[in-house]
Length: 181
Image (cartoon, rainbow, N blue to C red; front, side, top):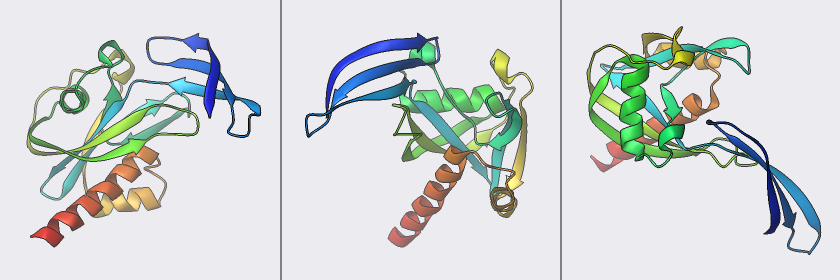
C-alpha cells in the first residue's frame, strides 16, 4: 500500500486525526482514517502478590474504570519509555519503583491508531504522594490480590483492554522466567 496524500482533519495536544489517500497493491484507490497519539507506558506495580490499580472516570465511556497506571507525555513525545513509565507510576500512584523492567509491547488499535504502548513491571516499591494531572483529580488507587484482580476481569469490573493484555504479558513473562530458572 502506498500513501498518495494526507490531510489533517483535527488536532489537539493529545492527538491528531488524519485522512490518508492510499493506493492498494492492485492499484485501486482507498482512504484510511488514522488517529495519531504519542506512545504510552503502562506500569504493573506488584508487591507481595498484590497489584496496585487506579480507578478513574473515562470520559468517552462515561464510566469509572479500574486499570493499571498508564499514560502518555504529549509535551514530551520523544521521552524514553522507561522514564515515561517511572513518571506515570509516580504521578498517578505516588509509588516509586526500585526496579522497573520492560516486559511487553502493545498496539492499542492498529486498524485505526498509530499509538503503541510499552508494558513495565514495577517492584521494590516506595510509597509517596501522587502528582496527578487535572483530569486525574478524582483518581483513586488500591491494592488488590492477584486472584481478586482476575475475578474483577472475569466479572467486568476491569475492562481496560491494555490492562488485561498487560496482565497476560506478565503471566507469560513470569512463566518464561520460571522456565529458565
